[in-house]
Image 1 (cartoon, rainbow, N blue to C red):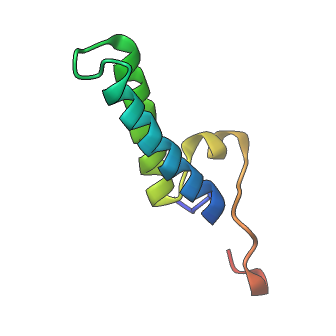
Image 2 (tube, rainbow, N blue to C red; image 1 turned 120 degrees about the vertical axis):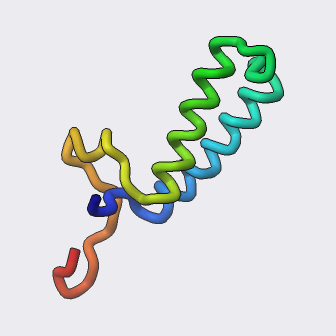
Length: 75
């Protein structure tokens, strides 16, 4: 798995993932088993995971990358 997320993308994913998890727990009824709360929590967890590992499978499917090219041609 070659990283395909840049640092800004990764940071944004982790922050949005945390916000999604908090929203799911506090306002969308995750604790009560509400479907919307569960869906938002899953999306938040995926955002955090992809942000931490630096790889997004959806980016790979569409051939996208937010990583900057490294000096010297190394990838």
